Length: 364
Image (tube, rainbow, N blue to C red; front, side):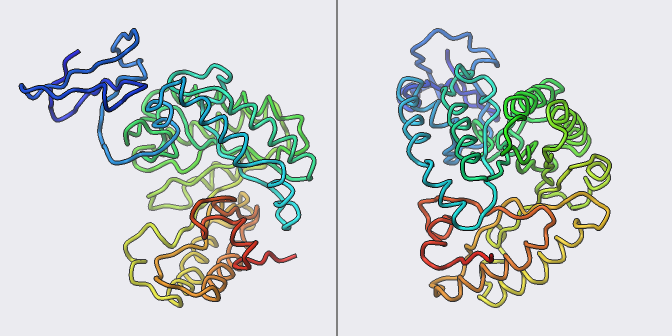
């Protein structure tokens, strides 16, 4: 179980004590101390190639770092307390009509998901549907993390910044099976509004060809169980062509194209003033949305946006102007928009906080 430092480093991570389990040796090797039986094979969740070590803080890291025994009560407590029935009542009373709920691919194996994940997320989704039905809300099931990870970020449950979805037919087929499972389970619920086949696939790691194949197969998997649930297809991040799925989606009734707009994740926003941010929304994002919103094309959905920016010390009124400018533009999307997210420890990322404190006023 020795590990030598090379260009690519294969690390044997100890699930319960990922730091204590690796020891540096004088000969520039690392010795891994793993407390359970392991094959050390590529199919072992404790063994993976490290391509980027930066501070990912996703569900994989929680489960792999704490280990099953410790991670289980932590996550189950989070699932049972962070979003509760009162939140669905708040959503309905605030004038919103639907919720977009992110899920990971391992939910299809609940209550015994593959290591290192822990069971319990499926029961949580079941409760969400019951609450949505009670308060007459639609539910968009959003596959936020696909097998192999469709982008290198923690929200795709990437182990270490790697992105391997679509590199094999196996994980494409597995993703279709997850969609089939979810559509089958909730097809009879009056609250099932849509199934989003994948959140934020990143180009060029996710190829156009593989994603088109998956979107077509995923659409068919939903249609096996529901004739009226919408099927949402997310545009690829970093793709130069926002129209690349219009042809495919246009030929599949009930399809929706998802686009995400943030005035944050680009250096050009670093020096923008309040007015420059608002003008960018009204000009650039308005134009981008109009390109994909066509009279005879698929519906369009601004699946994520937030009233947060890089303007220092902005006043409440300026945040209100920024939020209103975005809602004025995004309401032109023919399927609607969704704020990221309902609750967050950072106030401006929390729609609940923004509504309760008068930063966002929803139109009747």
